[in-house]
Image 1: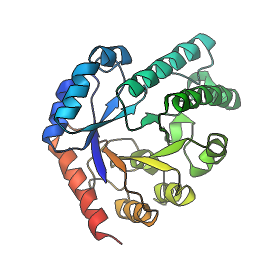
Image 2: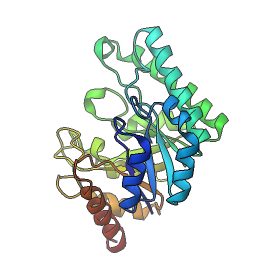
Image 3: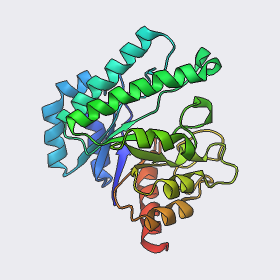
Length: 266
């Protein structure tokens, strides 16, 4: 298994990389958002970033921009948002990322009253991004979201999309899957329903109400069930700890807890 951590994009990228290297992580998941990690900034720092990755013997996973609006009802906003994602994909290829993570298009504002129309726009943008990723030779992993995004929450929501885009993989976000999940089984259902399409994991804990990004073991996410399900499908790839705390020792603690589960649970 390879474990990574995600940068906070208001901090300089290279300092974030140094911090995660000191904690012993295998890779940086680079959130490609302004102000410090916009694709234009990354491109300017590309040589230094690649040298630093080599020096620390680390790899990189790219998380495409989160705060864009590819399902917006306004054409000009969708067009600008899609451009941001496609340009970010190009830079992700330039820095030789292992894979690229894509948030589904949020459906918000007046879009919640015309959900079918918003989903049509979202699908058009997803098709453009998937086509671009295939052209660049990048592995694209689409992330599950949570209830109030009105977009790709349940395992069933992904069935037709994964048929339509055969190269697309899933990023299973444990925190997202747990929100509003009364039975605590949604994450495991994702794994069992799509055993050959899980391409990446985001791991964080919460209490089932909001996306708190808590350390593993401090909320109510069923990590033992998730780990057992992942072991059952033979998953042995990338896991990003999305633990957002000022004290980054909690990143290391969470990683060690997960690693221990994979070593002992059957």
